[in-house]
Amino acid sequence: MEFNVAVIGATGAVGREIINILYERKFPIKNIFPIASDKSVGKEIYFGDSKLKLGKLENLDFSDLDFALFSAGSEISKQYASSAAKKNCIVIDNSSAWRMNPEVPLIVPEVNASALELLSDKKIIANPNCSTAQLVVALKPLHDEANIKRVVVSTYQSTSGAGQKAMDELFNQTKSIFVNDPIKIENFTKQIAFNVIPHIDVFLDDKSTKEEWKMVVETKKILDPKIKLTATCVRVPTFVGHAESVNIEFNKSISAEKAIEILRESPGIMVIDKDEDGGYSTPIDCVGDYATFVSRIREDSSIENGLNIWIVSDNLRKGAALNAVQIAESVINRGLIKKV
Image (cartoon, rainbow, N blue to C red; front, top):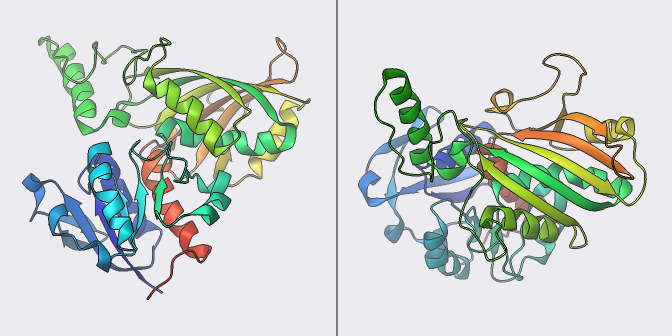
């Protein structure tokens, strides 16, 4: 059985990865429709060795589609997702537009694919924030074993999480420093080259940022509403790959050795944990990979039943594009899409 698939936002950083991953994973495609902004319509992109012409969203007939993978921002998703779903097209949305809607499942397939069974007539599935996705992949098997009470996470998020213009700004600022040109700040609140910025998204009334709030509420929705979580989200001068330093407090004892054993057997996780120079994963190691890498797994003696872990993942892949494709695969594998 093959499916008609549209990728909305096909020329963005995430959209390009969705196109690549659909090809890499041999997704059962009958026809694929890459959709881009007006300035790109008519241009061509590669799908494997083939070329695809970019189309216009306004000309897309959702009734001809089985899946529409949205990665063009919240406003586009709000405007078009519901109308697509009403035409029996399953929408998988990468924006924040639908994540906290109680009627819309928020899915990381390794964690809560069973929630897809609750897919309503709305036919919209939300993809979580990139920093949340890799976190819950690592937390899920540990939570199943020892029941997580509280999580403290500090993120080290790459510029690609803010889009292509943010990546370009890091490149241009770095180049300017080396040739002694003036530094231009356009997409960030401070210089990002050779710096870190403890500010992602807008500030909220409680002094947290919206990115930090997302990690809290999305983890609760995906994994367990009883888990207490606090986050500090930081933008760092890397191009791709988010890292997270995570302190976990459990309701019962779990040793580092047991945690390593569990994580090694868990889907979507690669454990790289050697107590030696270079015996851990860094963002550059995960680029282009599907896995969520976990390192530095050790017990925290400052609290009862505590562990520290280090997580890295390609945010354009597992944090967005790969997760979206995995959701579509899960829908198919669970028989939740019917071809007429």
